[in-house]
Image (cartoon, rainbow, N blue to C red):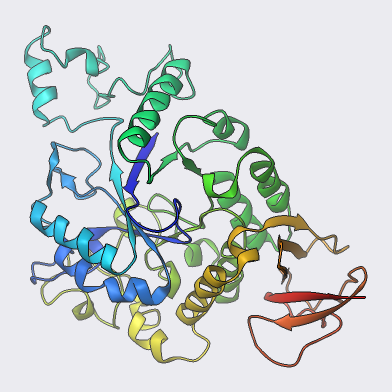
Length: 432
């Protein structure tokens, strides 16, 4: 269980689209090769330009590790990233950009260097001794007691649910406009046991897996049934679909450098219900595979690392920076970056795409995915030919006019032949 905690001080209770950032790899303001909070503040215009109204910061608290997931001081910003004052300046600037800030709050475990653990290690009567699970063999597995283990069960236990319920209620009592989202990396049935009264939302891992499988295999598979299961259970603002995160092979790598597939995945993600999360660099097609450091490489602002830092970067950038970078995609017509910007803005301004229910549409072709998003005043049809061959159009009931929202042009009264590895978004106007 990974917590992400954000305080939403303005606007609706939940974000439209959230952008996940690894601060160490985003932008370096002082030339030491490490991204920092001042650098992130300088790049807020880019995030605003992308259309995201929320940013999720991977851990920024003091930690001896590059990733920050073993905290030594929850009240102090990691010195590589700056100071507590730098964090305050960043949050203030983000709110001025109308960007909400989610902070990764790591409560499963502390660093073995944390004073609580060091004290407990030396003294069995120490006040925090019971906060850790002690192994009789050498290990680095010191879980905080909020994750209440029962035998070999380390998740989905009654004690875990009780603690999350107390935590969620406490946060909401002191910050009614807050938004908490948690990580339960499990199947849909298990994730749904963490509702209705614990955290506000959870990452929809099964949707991520089904989305990537559909694009990779060219078959619709279980994607829409999985979305429907979440939709039946909880309001869309309470679950968060995504393509990839900081622990997973990046989209373009997972798809074998299939750029058309990456465009399909982005279009589907950003037209599904839920609160979509985008991992930094996905919008320009950054690549990366395990080990974890190679999933979290410096943001490719330009063709060389000079776009990220004036010094030596903490981690070697991916070689594809010559092809996939912000500067080039900013200029190129039809780039992946421009598609993301268009889709995010389209979602923000369209009631159906932002808040509407999803209804699957039968296409008679396992390679053609189609669904409607419906709001009281607008209806949108999304169609994606996942296959490598053209597909015949399918019939929709009734009479209607289709307005293309991806490639504006003349209205249509029927679907076109569906080009291979291509997605379509149409606003539907029903006619008598």
